[in-house]
Length: 125
Image 1 (cartoon, rainbow, N blue to C red):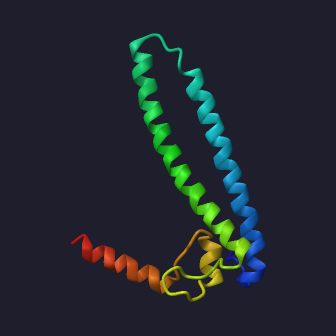
Image 2: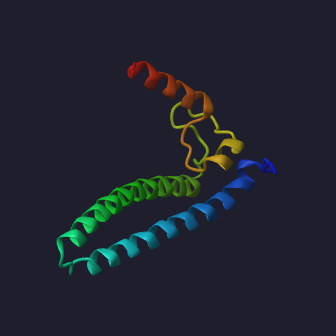
């Protein structure tokens, strides 16, 4: 079933609620990670230590991704609070509500995102 298209004014409260929930979920995972880190300080055999090192490296990578997500969420929530949510950071035009509904953390309109992707392709050829 397709999502109904809402106006930006109607969409913002729904997206705000979803972003706050996502932020809370990330912070809860972070607290669980810290708890596991402290529990894993008392490891005795080498195999267990190697396994723990691999697990910690993966956990650290996930923590870095979570931090990036938290920064993006905070930025979006701040824009919602000051009334600039939904403005393209590149051209200043409005980002279509349909795009924001699909990607609440979008900071560029579709046209500017496509321009950026084309530029990245040119740079990496």
